[in-house]
Length: 215
Length: 176
Image (cartoon, rainbow over all chains, first blue to last red; front, side):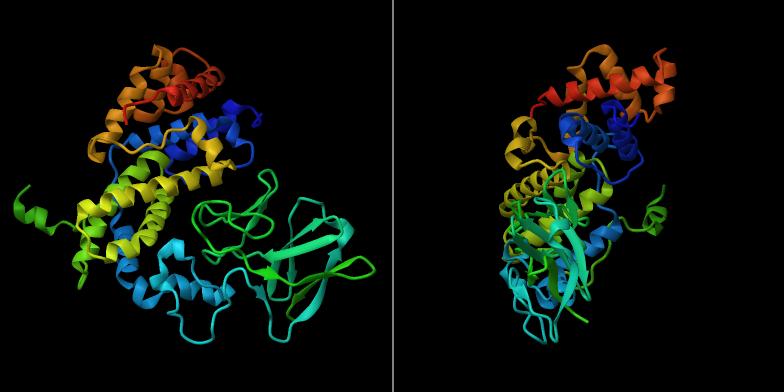
């Protein structure tokens, strides 16, 4: 019975003792006290930790090169054409990207030669639940409220990772970093991350949902 | 070990050609931040991600070339914020809910002494059985089965005891 709290916490403890990343899921909040205590005990068991040389080197390179090379901006721009949150790395990183002007965060994606792609029936969307769809080269999460359907990009505005819908939490979560977004694309945490890019979406008279995607 | 032998070992700290003084200071401070974060998330991968986030947020401040003492407070405040975000995201809670009963306070003792002291303070407040199960599991690395054998109990009972001991440990407020 994995549903029992002692089994679930033991799984988390065993992962921690094996040096694995904390992988939590909906429902774990019930045992937040036990889980954070386990993390502290696991963190203390080998005494104070120092950075691994490889990580320290990466960090040094980030510190040395981020302002001049804008690696985060470039990576984000490559995937979603968005800038980096001022709060995440400071304004010094902005405006360094060469080439086409990146789409600013929270702007709506306007694909060149975009075309409307049928992604399903509006009635199939469960109110309050995000549904991931793909319209050619554009991934989006759809949300329905009454007759209205909205869509945001499925790519995190921080790092180029595919968001996932956390139904229990009612938000979009990034698998790469602790970042999450509401259905309107606004971040829920205090990182001052950019809002997710919006995606054009419409409902046809016959109740079909179409997303402005690519061929 | 002779000095020569020691010198031939791989360097613990990577040499950084052309690294600026500001970067050197930042890295030294971020070592302390890393230890602080590691002691709270208990694993290297998450600690590295969060330390990287702290560093990225702090770049503008670090680049001003401020002395270490001036940036330490800023880094730790940032680390606390990042940790709060980490737990609230992973647990699916708002930060307000998270802070209801989780302490994320800054340590007053040097981080080098913090972890061991904190654990001892936590364990000292627990009943004998709870302390024993956590000591065996976390400090001695016993498996559940080994703990059960050591404590003349069953794996199932030890699992329940471990959960209760962790809940109790979370209620202990070590001096931070």
